[in-house]
Image 1 (tube, rainbow, N blue to C red):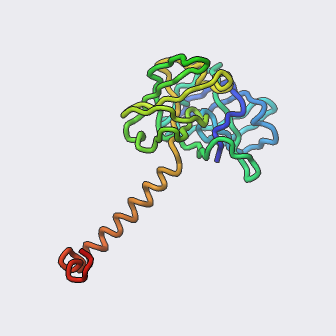
Image 2 (cartoon, helix red, strand yellow):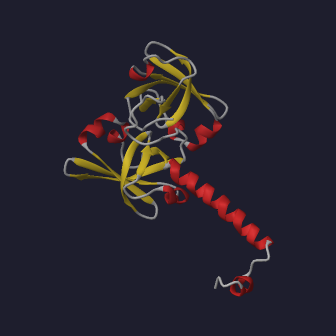
Image 3 (spheres, rainbow, N blue to C red):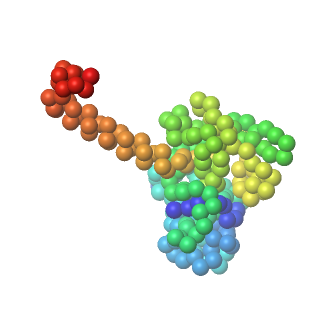
Length: 220
């Protein structure tokens, strides 16, 4: 689990492509403090397991599901990535609950200046838009951001100068791809409600309760 507060930007040292898999070597400092083999490090919002940890780098594997769903497949040597080490129960929750399980890629459709800020409009898969709420939270490349505007296919976020410097979104361009993780709570509520309503609908269908029964017993 993560908070979406990026600790540092790491640099991609090496990307090895396998059979629908990747092995990625990334330089880092802050996320490596007390880190060990097997720890989870969010890389552009993707929860990766460190299979090797050095003094100033770590190595992680990315399996087929991760390669297919995220922008890690687009990484190149020398590129910067957002990094955050997994939280503990003692970690202040300054952003929001981020799992590191990316839902889909988004594509930057426009970047506009708004005073000191920059507004990034990102198009995502329509199937994911139902989990995005205006003034709610969204994870973009692992960074916890506030949704300021919504259309049928796009969401917009605004970055102050400090945030532009601290996360990689600040240097991205129109047409670039970003990793999107929608709100965890919304997905669980949908699943639970779907199961509940489906179960109760089935029970009602199997029972003798109908409109005549309800009318006879004073419910209608």
